[in-house]
View 1 (cartoon, rainbow, N blue to C red):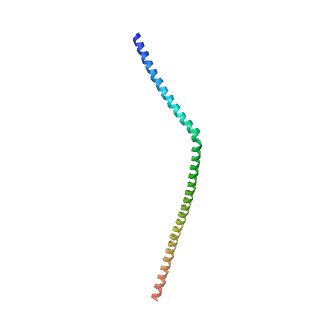
View 2 (view 1 turned 90 degrees about the horizontal axis):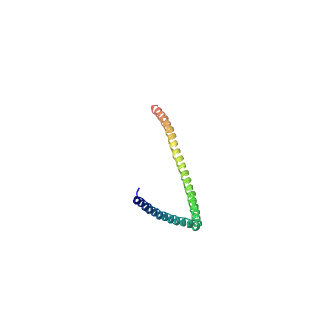
View 3 (view 1 turned 60 degrees about the vertical axis):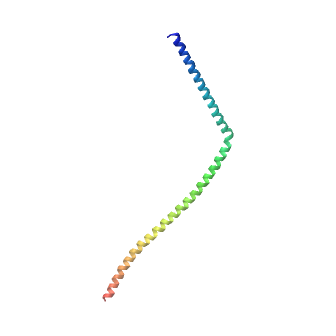
Length: 116
């Protein structure tokens, strides 16, 4: 290797070193800013955020209780409607079988009385 090539390599290495140092300084600056923001959130924002979350949790739990009650009422109504719909169907089936038997008996009796 010649002296000129070594000097060129040294210049390139120094240039790269300067770029890397500048990049490291930028990253350190961003890290400090991010840490400052996070520290500020922890110190100043925590009680307010915690209180707001507690209020929101209470509101959501209240809504859940109300919706659960509405759902239970709707299920009870649905169950009652199903029972109501089932009973007339059974009554109609029983009535049809009873009526069919009565009609046949009526026809039999009516036919016998008209033959007399």
